[in-house]
Each structure stands twice: as structure tokens, then as C-alpha cells.
Length: 386
Image (cartoon, rainbow, N blue to C red):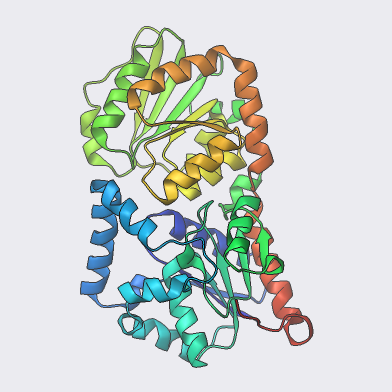
């Protein structure tokens, strides 16, 4: 009965969602014990608040500064110190003593990290000889920052061939990397008929459905997009999901449907995948998880407002693959959408490209690999170091 610890950090939602998807997949196997842990729960309140405020304030309120810091800790040179040395100079391991104690006392057979921070905490234990089990890294951005790299990692599960080539250029052996995609909820691997999903959620089936996930985009920018979209000469239904963003919900209160565009405004929902499956186009930011979920449904995207750093790279990857259009100006979204709705062949091609780079079975593929390796470990999977 293997004991698995899945580690994430609540800095953004994508890493947490990936960890939960993996736990869901592990629970499909009998006699497997799995526990999901937010590493920030195992540090003190001051450190947790500081890290979360640091991420939020830089990534959402000061993107240029975030980009400077992100790129300052990045390097393409294999001779440069590993990301662990750079990251741990910012976040010292003693702040995570409780997490290290948890790992040493519970002695998991497998640790899976879906964020760079726990990668480095486990790396520290491996270096000290305090953890000898299997350690896997699941990279949740399409272009991996150097801080994802560490010694003592048994395998990396990466989103794309591009990710693998970038890491190979930094010294990670190709045989230790597996292109699985980013793990998404298991329901996304199940077929869903577009029109059945529309009927389920009272959406029209005779006109296009366009979904805008706006919770992570500044409210004024979403308002400008929505105001432009409802003024469109094309006929479609626009579904705007604000999630927990109350500021956005308030900003859209006085925006109404038009003669051509029916506007539906939603808050926090539990049927994101149904909505993606029902949509002709999804408008979203470039978080690794939401992009992976939409790709897995073969739905074309318009990517807007990526945060400098990893989201820019995610957006470049998806647009470069032909599955999305990437835009900086919210005012350009209505024109881009009108173009796509008038060019059905272009939308069809984008859907095909999304299908080619989407990985709906990523979570199960990763879990099966780790369990097979655990079974075979004594003879075929000796731990190696990068």
C-alpha cells in the first residue's frame, strides 16, 4: 500500500487544482493512500501572509516588477546554479521546518510536487539524506522556470515537447522527462456533447456560445471587453464568469444584453467544464491550468492580459500551436471574436490544433507512471540526480 504525498502551494489556483486532480486519480486505485498538502499550511502565519501578499501584489498589481524578478532568477545556462539555490536564497528552508518534519515522520513512498516551492523543500531533505523515497515534479506551466529544477528528482512530468527541450537545454536528462500535459480533473477526459451541455444549462443551441472567464482579469478591462462585445453586430450568447471577484460583478451590474448579444453574468460556478464543452470560443487569461482544461476540450481560445513571466510564455505556446489568438488590448477582443465567428473554418482549425496539444488524460497517465515505478523500484527505478 503506497503512501503518496502531493504537495502544492496556494500561490495562484492552478497548482492546487493540479494537485487535487492527481489525488482524484490516485483514489481510483485500491490500497493507495494519498494526502494533498498545501506547503504554506506548514509555515508560520507571517511567512504565509508575506508570500501570498508578495505574489498577489507583484503579479496582479505590479506586473512589470514581477517580470523583472521572474527573469532575474532565470537562466538558460546549464552551468548556472540550479533554481533551488536561487529560490532558497529568497525563502529559507527553516521557514518550512514543520513540513520537513511531516515528511520525515510520515515517510511517504512517493512525493509529487506541483509547485516549485515544495520541489525545493524536498530537495533540501534529499540533500541531507532525510528523504529517500521517490520524488516527482509535475510542471504546471508550459515553459518551466529554472526554479522547478532540483537534485534528487526521479522524473519530471511536463506539459509539452517544448518544455522538455527547454529543460534538456538546462541539463535535465531527456529520459527523466515525460510529456503528459498538465493534470486536469478526470471528468474532462469523459466525452461531453456540446448541445447536451447547452440543454443542461439552459443555453441556446442555434447561436454560438462565447464564455469569458474574467475572475483573474482587472475589472475595468473586463468591463471594456464586455461593453464592446454586447455592441457586436454578430448574434451570439456571451457568458461572463466572475468567480469570486465581487469587484467584477459590481463593474458589470449596469451592462445589459443588446439586440444581437444575450449577456449572462455568473459568479462562482461548479460547472466550468460543462461550460467549456458547450462553448464555441473561450476568452481567458493564460494560467497553465485553465488553458489546459480548455485545450483538453478542444475549444478555441482568445487569450487576454497574460501576467508577465509564466503566463506570457503559456500564451505564446498556445497561440504558437494555433489553438488561440493572443491579445493585449481588451478593445481588440470584439473585433477578433467577430472575425472568428465569421470564419468557421478558422475556428474548426483552432479546435483541431487544441485537440493535438490537449492532454485530457494527464492526471491518470502521471499517476499510473508513478505507481508502476514504485512497484518496480527495487530493480528498475534507482533514484538518480540531475
